[in-house]
Figure (cartoon, rainbow over the protein chains, first blue to last red):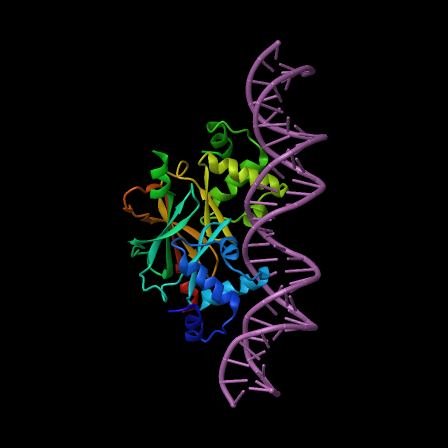
Length: 136
Length: 136
DNA sequence: AAATAAAATGCAACAATGTTGCATACATGA
DNA sequence: TCATGTATGCAACATTGTTGCATTTTATTT
């Protein structure tokens, strides 16, 4: 599905910024930071526009935000677009890339009486296959 | 073990700020944000001092940082102090408290060939027993 | 107890991100 | 094409992270 269609499907207006964001993320095999997305886009947009675009796209489930630590925020396509189950995210401390690990699903946890779960995040940190390969 | 002893054990100088931080966290049943810790302390310290104190204490494993999202950062005692295994953290979206869920250990994940794991974080979001109780 | 060396702190300055209000520009359905 | 509801850009401000440097403090040595 094209970025434009994704937006229409979710009753969102088609704007170049939104389409660009979706496109950039869709083309990348790893999750992207705001900065990385900005570099991919042709047009130049205000920070506020990115902020609100991310929010809108996230609210619709088109993208999802992955917070590695408070200085490392990445965006990937949401499960609505890529029919994926809830998966873990891997952060490589060398190349700083974040990849969705579709082979690792987030566990079904059991909490004490009275707790309600809305969301579970599993973040794995380490070094990726690519970085380890170059080392040897 | 008292805050002062914890510091000595780790070859760190005893300062009121560090002791205060450890003390505040130790007395709380939930993880604390910088702001919450600051409110607990008697003395007033510069932001930089907090920043560096957290870093030092974290490097020594005395405390650990829990990043819920980039605007919600909490600190809890490290596993060195409380002999705990790596556990999940629960974030209540109502009361905003973060609790260490010692009953839920982080899973042992298996990644594709070439990946090396240094750390695994499991964050569960939802509503806690206390908040759900008051609802009904 | 005083001196000293090493380390912690406060202050200034700056970067990145988050966030809101408001005027203006734009997309889309009629 | 027009009208309307939105999206955008700009300004302004909050929070957190981060570094350099001068000053103060801790802990050790005399």
